[in-house]
Figure 1 (cartoon, rainbow over the protein chains, first blue to last red):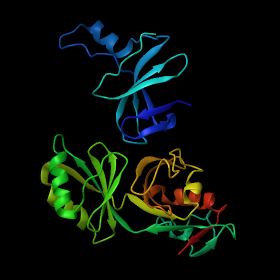
Figure 2: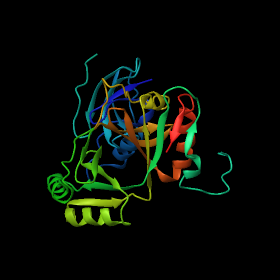
Figure 3: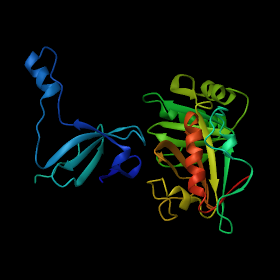
Length: 91
Length: 200
């Protein structure tokens, strides 16, 4: 069970949230190639280690949050509002 | 009391709350009741939260609370439910009157939606009320972590619910979708059989 310290609601259990994928993906600019858009939509890294990801707090404040989670241990190191970028540990 | 016969299609759930004492005897029973309330959702438009705060202070004497809290005004309470979004809860009045009053006060500063028919308010009170809720609630309701005037949007019995502690007894108002009220009451009364519960 992952516990996420929502910046709005406080510490809540994983079941209140929905995982919404990599939060570092950037939409290509206007006029970018088809390949760039293909990669934006489909291509994702699968890192072993710290990962910044979207979690949607549907059962609470209904906000999207950025969560820094370790993909091996599930440790949550930081949680930030959607407009912020949390600090990602080097290792 | 038959809880399995839904043929009567009683959406009010009142048949699930027959007046009297139910469940275990001789303990510390909780009190469960349906509260007849108006529930109005107020969502500040971008950059207009200050205008909404001024409007609701003027109209209802409400000082809009921050995350996790509620505040009482003149005959109504405001519950924080999301960033720059609140529920205004008041005893049931004329249909739509509370929403109209809030809409008039807020103008174009907020989206005001009358949820009075979409939500139901169930109250549970008693020294063991938090103990009963703990069977289904993942939020810590211990007095050291929660208390009067606190609000949490979370899940109760796997259903979306907004929980508002109204006093130190403790008493809680539980705001749920009215279409889930029957299911919610079945679960809540079942959970309260262990302490016993009283319906006024």
